[in-house]
Image 1 (spheres, helix red, strand yellow):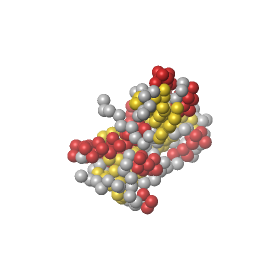
Image 2 (cartoon, one colour):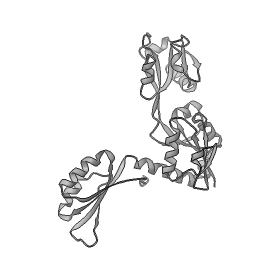
Image 3 (cartoon, helix red, strand yellow):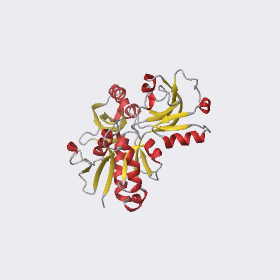
Image 4 (tube, one colour):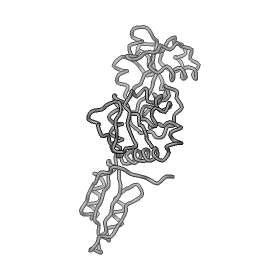
Length: 290
């Protein structure tokens, strides 16, 4: 059973997508010299590198079984694919923006526009229809921000992460059309025919996502101090306690905590008598299915 994964060949989500697969145990055998196709250390899994915008169509058509790309691109291509997971990176928004000196200041004002420029005509057309806005769509392939400045559009719909680029071009946000992030998508026929292998890949990726920002903290504790240590140690489902061989008065305690809580937790544990503290990185966390 062979599985082909489509990944972005370049752009801001390409590196994180490759890194995610590698952390999930699907490392590329020839990542140093990336080609159109790459093998992985699993002989049943190969990777295809292509434009992020083309991945939804390749997955829908079955040229790839699964893919990693932006949710905005899936909606724009309007294809029938299964969205398996929100990978929680590459977050962005598709917004409508107008020049700062424009009379267009609110969503209601958009009913007065005549033309909107965008790289996302499909999503924008649906937004206009849903909001009873009668405007012409000018499809562009880049530099959308300049359209109002040169007088070819009243407003634009464009992606923004922080809003900085819009402000630099003296544009003001009017409304958010969609919020987007990177998703793991799959071909619907592939899910039926190759379910077991696709589930293995999905499980590996989910395990990496769950481990992100988590640390394993371990300590030795006198049994007399155990209750105080439990109160000081947060965790996913409470600390785990085990016997220490050869020392009946000491137990080992460990728990998975947020990386943000490490500094505070270590100091709390020391104050209540914890010893031999260790903080260990975690590669994956596989939680029980609900």
